[in-house]
Length: 315
Image (cartoon, rainbow, N blue to C red; front, side):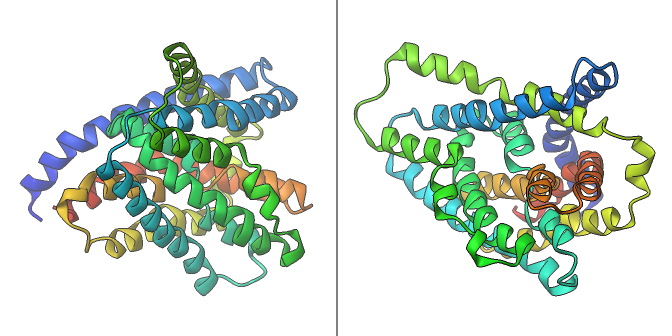
């Protein structure tokens, strides 16, 4: 791995990724200013988050499945699902080995990434809209893990794990419906497909505005004073992606884009749902919000590095 190779990859892949991240960072800044100027309040941010998670994100996923069936695409979707299981298992296993049981929220913040909010815009920007089709497999696995292992991790109570919540999740419903559309010879009317696609395209700007609003909930300097936030960031942004890269190195080069997609998902910051779940189960919501915010800010540095590293090793 010489310097010339590194610089070539940085130029070809790094520039596209950094450009996309800068755009996202700009939109986050707008959201931050809007919250500070009180155009947003907690209620409006919560409403926008519900619209994003329950309408716009599912529309993005559903739109990705409105395509002609091919056996190759179906095979790669299954491969992505399998790789999502491997990397998701790594993400929840690492903190279990190294962090005490009492640090449940920190374990959760390491184990679950912001794959929908930040994964979709990055995959679209770097690989193209057609790869959201494969990212859907990762999101399905993410939802399966978060509503089973994730809830148990926070509550330590198996009764809180709900199969009903998994199946009624709008993203899971969109994926199931999308798969049925994908394998069916009958496709939606063009006006419906276009409408779904247009709704889905709102995901990037709205998600970044919301994250920016979340960052404005307190002084930014307090985020950087959180010691556990730095430990979580080390695991979430560096160790989990690195171990994930090594775990899927065995795949053939013909699947490089699939491998890259999985690593993009694996190196995104802590899931914003960590703060939501902490609030629902009467945990320290403020503490985990600071952790999520710190990983989000630092990810703008670490994500390009992880993707470039993955691309070099996947050659």
